[in-house]
Length: 250
Image (cartoon, rainbow, N blue to C red; front, side, top):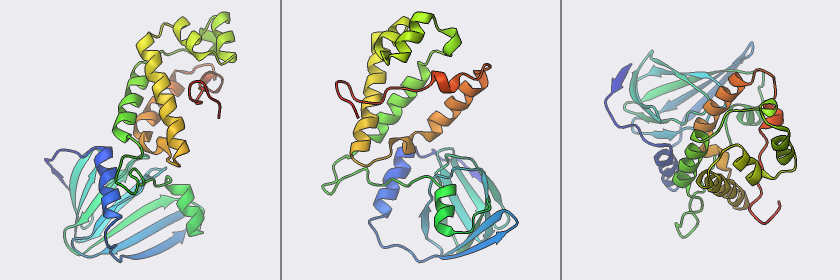
């Protein structure tokens, strides 16, 4: 497996590539499915030049180049795989592969499910490619949403229910999130950022867009960090958030 010096594509670039590829004639690839003892193996045979934009997987799994040569890109960079090379794919990874020669790619998953439709729902995230409407106008501003998400995560103040004062607990219970945020030391700018982020989530859902699909690589590490800091098991009590837009209710 060769690491290739190249600039890693952003998630937004991968999503835009997928949207463009979806408009073009689709290649016919031979797909075989194997099941055994809580394992699922998916074998895809592709001709040289075939580009595949994969879906976001929910679980750890292996990707193996079983034949030929495959270039694989993700948000982490690019590698060139030859027969026998194996990649570990982490949850939240969205990968682009290009068959440099006639090639075979195989993925290995842990599951007891054998129904392919149910398997799809269990292993991969809902795939949202409709970022642009019929007039090619932006339907959902993914780069802006990701930037805002990163700002909200970076500005988060660690603390759970028992770390708050009784007054803060009361404000939180009454869903007075602006007053609660100020009492916790958040600035007006940070409160505005959160309000805009919350509104973008609501607006996306009104357009049948799953906004979380585009930020799982940002939110999953942040959630795991908070879980590790939650020594009293209070995260479920301390982490719900108001997602209705300002001045309206869902």
